Structure formats: structure tokens, C-alpha cells
Length: 274
Length: 257
Image (cartoon, rainbow over all chains, first blue to last red; front, side, top):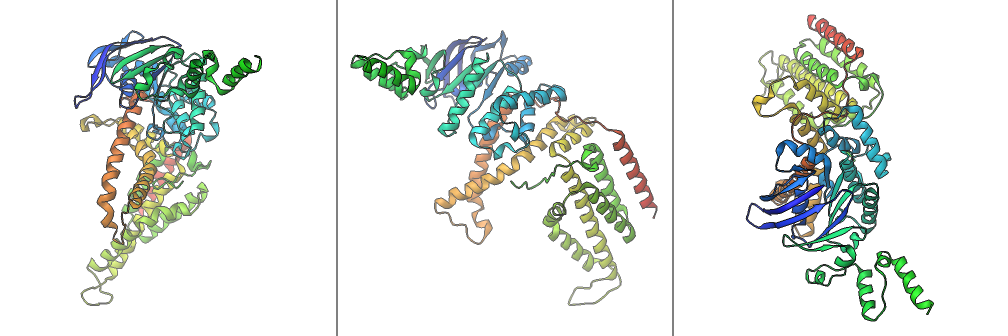
């Protein structure tokens, strides 16, 4: 549903951020994009719904070019972005008002706006904070409200740009759980992060470095790729452990490395039975 | 969390259920009335009217104290200026100051008018959701040709909403910047102006960066600064028209005296 063709972008000061990016995102797919700070991954995110327009090449969202101003509103209804800092995403004085912002921009009637607020709040299970100030919430709850603000527009594709990097690990996990659930409900997910541990559920992972696509493939291939280390990205610890075990001749199947418990079960199965 | 500007207190009184446009018009009308009424009797009646409305609304008195308190110095200043600089029958004289009887009357009148204005405005903001107020203002401005000024009513309403939402964040940021500077050995002496540059520069930088992120997030959620709807349904009902009519009658009567 989203296609990037030869996309290049440089910042006004001349630093190239994206160089000749080609990629496609299919409906219902869960894509992980990783890269370290300054690799251009956030710039890429801003291209996905026309917040930035490529200087060369083009970005097509369901056949619409993001360079076409008359299509931008429709494109932003299809692709929503959740940003890193919950605080600077709030526009409302209360949670309810904040969630209303997107639907209001879509010029929906008041009744429909309220219905969407109800649904989005139910999705994040924060109904009791409806009339609270979003600033009074914890970071994790805040990020959920930001997510609900995007959900209220009912987009098909959700882009998450380092949504966990300002949260404590526990709330980060909670937010990721929701991302996974939304994907299971049929949303297309683009998940941008520098933390490889977060990308287990992805269908496909794209590694970006200095504005180029360096690697692309299934998580089992990408996450254990030795070149990640050269980029300064640490593979998930369980995968690293599995790689070390492999060197000693103990092979743990890929799907068992996704959680500590299944990993432990596999080790027990291998060793206790022999 | 304390909200520094608006002190909306949710409720279900008659005042709460009125359309924000009714209340905005009423405050304007009462403001004009307060400044057009010359007699102390008329001003007394307006105060009585305010007390009556307040008892209707069920709002606590502290709301109104909080509205007047920041302006107290200003009001005292107006009072003194009137007292000493109005020509008239001199009451007493010390040094070069000659307070006059007319000055005393003018002083009382003017400060009473300002207090009335503040009180009625506080009555509105305390009984109306701020976003409903901005929505009401937006609706009232919509027919005006604001295009000539380079803005439209929707932009103005969004601006007002954002300022209301972001003031607490701004105060929080001041506190954070202060703490950050203090932890690096910055001395906040007795003179409050001493620390202004050290606070203001990081503060402004931070605010501008926040504003950029906010602008992106807003745009991403489809904001274009053009026509948009609101989740508030504004509907002038019978009670709105009746209240306005009653108020106009009240004003006409008061101005007759």
C-alpha cells in the first residue's frame, strides 16, 4: 500500500538524510526499521504520510503521491504516525479533547467524533482518564493516549517512531504489546526503533545506515546477521546466546528464541532428555 | 494540578448549561453596562446581580478571589490615581497631594467597575469548559472577514486552545530549567532579574524545539489550518435566547436610572 521509489532527501543544511531508498509496504504487514541515531530512519518515517516530501523520487500511498497537496489530507487519514515524545504530541487540555483533534481536522460531525473517542479510549483501556489532563499521566499512559489520538482517525497504517525510547522498560513493553495487538487486528505497522529486542513480531526488518538500506529480510536472518555489530547495534540477547550456543554445536530453533521461557524449555528439552 | 488561567469547575447549574456564545455576549454586555453606569446605586445593583448569579451557579467563592487577586495592585493604583488627580473639593492636604471628594468617588467607581468586569468574566470561565469557550469564540468570529488579517477563525480557535493547553507545560519547563541550572551551580540570588538570561535562553530554545515537534504531530493528524469541526455541539436553545432577552431588558432598565 505504500511504495517508496528512489527517495532521496537532504536537510536544508545539505546533510543527506536519505539516499535512493526503494521499498514497499504491503497491507497488513509488520515492518521493523532499525538504525542507530542519525541513520535517517526518522526522516524516513516523516516521508510516509507526506510530512516531508522527497527531493528526488516519490512516495506513493495507495496510488496517491505525497507530493500532491490536494491528496495530503486523505494520505494522513490512511497513515498515522506516533512520535517519540508523548508531551509534544498533545494538543488538548484533556485526554478527550486531545483525541478529538484528529477527527475534528477530518471535519467529522460531533456525534461521530465522540463515537471515535469512545472506541479509541476503549482500545487503550484508559477510559477513566477521559477528563484528565494528558500531562498528568505517566509516560507510558501518555504514549497510549498519543496512540489513541492517531487511532481516532482510523488509519490503516500506523507508524511508530521510537515510541518506547522515552519510557521505562515496563511501560515500553506495555506499549509494544498494544502495537502487536493492533497488528493482529489487521493494521499495517511500521515500527522504527534502535532496539532490536523490540522487533521479534515483525514480518520483515529493514536496516538503515547513513540514509541507505543496508539489509532487508526476515527477522531470523537479519537479527542474527553479524554485520549489525559493525553498525553498533546489539542483537537481542537471546539471539546472541543462541548464536554462541550454535558455535558449540547446540542449535536452538529460531522460533524458540523469541521469549526467555520458550528458550529455556528448548534447552531443557535438549539436555534433560539426552 | 493548578491551572493558572482558566479555572473551569464542572457542574450542572443553569449557568453551566448555557451556550458559551450566550455567556460571552452576556459578559460583554455586562462589561459595557458596568462602565456606562454612573450611579453608585446602579453599580450596587450589578454587584447584587453578580451575587445572585453566583448563588445560582453553585461555584465556590475562591474562584472569584483568585480572579481578582492578581489585579489588586492595578486596582489600588487606579484608585489612588483617581483620588489624587481629580480636580474638585479638596478633603485634606499633605505635601503636594490633595485628595478630593470627586476623586474619592471616581476612584471607588472605577475600581468597582474593574472588579465587576473581572468577576463576571470569572463567572463565565468558571462555568464554561475552556474548549467550549474557544469553540464559541470561533463561531462568533466566523462571519467576520478575518481573511484580511491573514488568519481565519479556525486558526484563532486552535491557537487559543493550544495556549490554554500549553501554559502548564511552560511553567513546568521553567521549573525544570531552574533545577537544571541550580544543579550546575547557578545562584538564584535575591534579585529575580539576575537569573533571567540564564533561564530565558534555554527556555526559549526548548520551547521552540517543542513547538516544532508539536507542529509535526499536528500536521500528521491532519491539521491544515482550514475548516474543521468541533466535538462540541453548540446549539442556541430557548433558554439562551430568553436569558439574553432578560439581560438586555435588565441593561435597558439599569441605564434608564
